[in-house]
Length: 279
Image 1 (cartoon, rainbow, N blue to C red):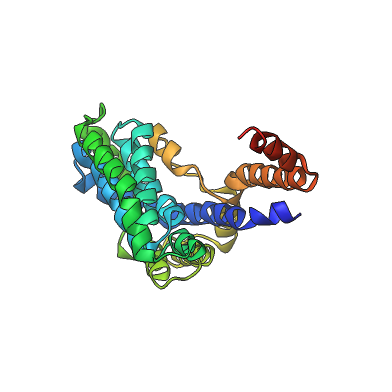
Image 2: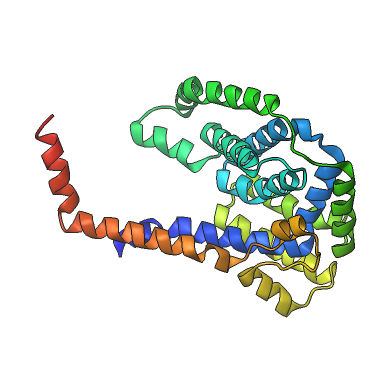
């Protein structure tokens, strides 16, 4: 039980991200970001822009999970529509999000480490720059050197028209994204911020997109399902919901639970002693 409770915050975070992604899709938030990105972003610069965008967002909010679950999902969708390898876009998202989270004075882990070790926050951040900054620069250079995928302008216009036909797009649909950024900047708990952003997205779906309360609750749990017939857009939009994260929640639950049992039974202690005795 104690081992399982160690992983409980991470499980709550995953479920909150699943709910937020589903409601963001239904409210048109992600569709608005995708359409804006397809109109403005040159595919040649998508990877470095993704890296910088996620890094800045994590730096000012102090959370890599929040950046990946919001900006990361949108950038993955834009890259998919442009024919760029999803592994490359995912690498840019994760690299940027982790870079900003490590160096952010708002990050819980960045504050916890020097507090436990008895050092100063500024010294801790400066020491991490020696390993973090070079890898960030290398990743940025590699992203710039990558060529774009086999996209065509006509395809992008088709995707834009389909999304505009599925959702009402505008500034109102960006309110859930604005809400989570403001909440995280105000140092509100990450799970609470994700939940409030999902509620905001549900309100946008109800009042602006014309969705019913039943459909909003269903999407929050099962994820969003689009009526668009375009295959790539179906791959992008048919996702989210708390249920999509339950398999990962179960893995974490069993893993940390097993770890707790191995520790309490003395298995880990015996293994550690056998190694220490030979040092």
